[in-house]
Length: 315
Ligand SMILES: Nc1ncnc2c1ncn2[C@@H]1O[C@H](COP(=O)(O)OP(=O)(O)OP(=O)(O)O)[C@@H](O)[C@H]1O
Ligand SMILES: [Mg+2]
Image (tube, rainbow, N blue to C red; front, side):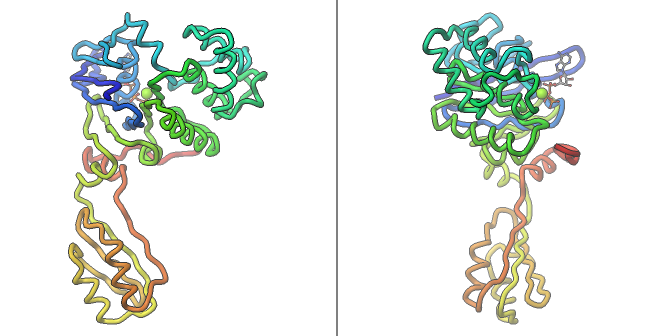
């Protein structure tokens, strides 16, 4: 089932075309990774999808209904984790959750139960009575996520939920996104960290300058770019025959030998790792092997001619 569908959505802010005929869909139970550099239009796409802003043209269908700023009913079925943390610093974690749950009409025992479950889900049960003003950045982000989940939405939108947090909180969040989908929640996960998207997304939409420049599974996206694959292998028995056997493998373009080390360059998408390993093992054995595979960064670089992001500084 299609959970959300953006069709040809256009949004302008003055001279800036934030969304330039954007189309993509999200299927039930999947994590759709929305990847793009600063200013690509990710947050604008999310705000339109969530019905927080209207589009200039195009159409957004969410859970079978037309999304628009006045559609309150649809908002009850979705959760939105905003890019900036939006919790009340002076209320305790638990009170924040009771507040947001209440806004969505969750009450009584159900609310009590949901507050408990969501705190547990994000690993903050022990901090239920504490105010988030004293939390670390990672804990605040986790509470921010909990606030979007307390009403058990079918569809969760997360706008860069891991920016500037410690590695433990980051892996905790990524892991909980996976757990959510096993419980049947559909997730739109936005990030400019390609490693995260590569790790958790079932399908990926890449945006740049307001446009969708590519979409598909990781394998599909990587398959689209022409990229050579280099396998480096160290063998226990380097012989001239082995060199010839490597050269004879289908798709292999070049083999460079230095003592027991061989660098084997294959054409795009040849997937020769197993074949190389097999040939080397028949010839005596392998002491080391590695492969340089193309990444989403290479996909982005090939499609746009620029890097997805500047080198990360800290955090
Ligand atoms: N309310 C607004 N008024 C004017 N311009 C805006 C507004 N919101 C977004 N923009 C512009 O639209 C473009 C897309 O912005 P958007 O916030 O959607 O990008 P983003 O992909 O979420 O970027 P980031 O990674 O920095 O969060 C940018 O050029 C931005 O400056
Ligand atoms: Mg943004």
